[in-house]
Amino acid sequence: MRPVIRSSSLSRIRWALRNNQKRYSSTLYSKSRKLLIGVNQNQALVNTNTDNSSLYSRLSIFRGLSAEAVEAADPAATRLTVSDVNRKGPLVEYERRINDGELMTGDICQIGALRELQRLYDELVESVDTCRLDRYNTSDKSSRSRWFWSRLMPQTSYSPVKGLYLYGGVGTGKTMLMDLFFDQLPCTWKKQRIHFHDFMLSVHSRLQKHKGLSDPLEVVAQEIAHDAILLCLDEFMVTDVADALILNRLFGHLFSNGVILVATSNRNPDKLYEGGLQRDLFLPFISSLKERSVVHEIGSAVDYRKLTSAEQGFYFIGKDLSTLLNQKFQQLIGDNVVARPQVVEVVMGRKLQIPLGANGCAYFPFEELCDRPLGAADYFGLFKKFHTLALDGIPVFGLHNRTAAYRFVTLVDVMYENRARLLCTAEASPLELLEKIVTISEAKSMAPRTSSRSRKNDVTELCVDNELGFAKDRTISRLTEMNSKEYLEQHAITQTEASPQELKDEIDGSKNIIEIKKEQCC
Image (tube, rainbow, N blue to C red; front, side, top):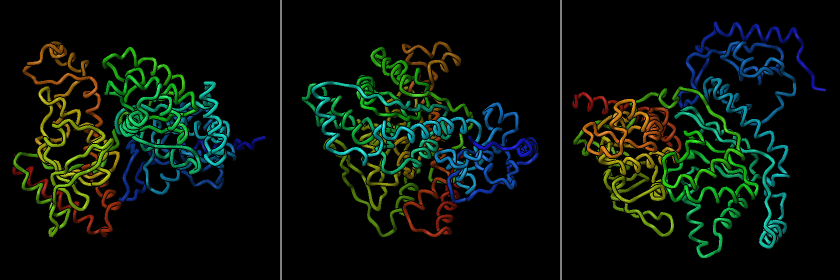
């Protein structure tokens, strides 16, 4: 029988929660050198000065919420038991990071997603043998035997545990929450966390290797399942028709091999690949995805990336600033270092020419990186060798350069995934760069005539594109964060051994340059 908290203790808890509304977040400290995610300015701390330490973990998760809000979010939250604090998983880790100042107070929308991740974590722990998660509990011999008999007698082995599909607006903490969940899993489990772009590149590379087989997708799925029963895909977004046409069969094989999917996305599953070519062939995948995963929306309207200190980095607005960018590039690689053309190997024997590169920094004119037939594979190859990109001459995007806009969005996604640093000159701010990219519904609300694809010479130069219009918010959000002091400090810490004062001087210096140039341009 589980021990239950007495009613007198419960009264004290409720009193603390109700009085919580009078305490504001001034009591919360934050380590200034750590990236801040999950800020909610309207939340406050709850009084946790209680002698009963067994209450602490679950109670403090709901700090910042009134008693009524807690009961609405979780009726069981006011019926805590001693066993709650013995749990492991993402909820406990989330609380630890708040206490250590790595995160600020979480909002109720993130807590709702965490509860789903905790549910999945608990089910996986209970079903670790059934799901064949531990790579050391299954011998190579039995694996080979199972593969051999599956060749003779095809069979399915669906996981008893459903995965999770997290979707919501940009900057709501989806990636952070999935990474938090992934980091709590035992290192002996067969698991993989990968960006969706990178995952699909790997799939196409494997297909090329197995070209000529009767069903190469089945073999690829078996290879993936052998390495990772738990597959965590970040930024699930389908824009390529080649990807769309194979996803249903690929994941059909993956699910039948026991793979459990955890994915984050900006899009509701029903909106994936909306308006894409031959979408009717893609629709069965959506049904399969919803059948094998719990779909959960993070309903927060706050973009936490934009709450960082913007305009602290190397984003220079204006024309004819190439000389300035070259100067900053030279400072980063070293005054006595000479940058030279280089070549980077990408997938399937392809090579990418680097105009100038040295000491982990690459220099490109915009046209050479986004106006050429390049894609995610080239960008991933680039950032496997370079941690900093100097990009000269980012234009304002519209109907005339829609293809370049697609490549730029992909480039920013890959940079963000690799936590790379961006130096650039641009014609406008991140928001203004993509201002003319709109979805069909946005175009209709602005001016009905612009929603027609036949009006290509519209004087407003609007680019009406659903996928690009939907992705632009994510790109603006990421560019804003990549330009922040917190992001640059994190990058510098991971790439250099510079002292805190040197980091501060570098970032403050770049800020001053930006402000000077803005005054000159006005």
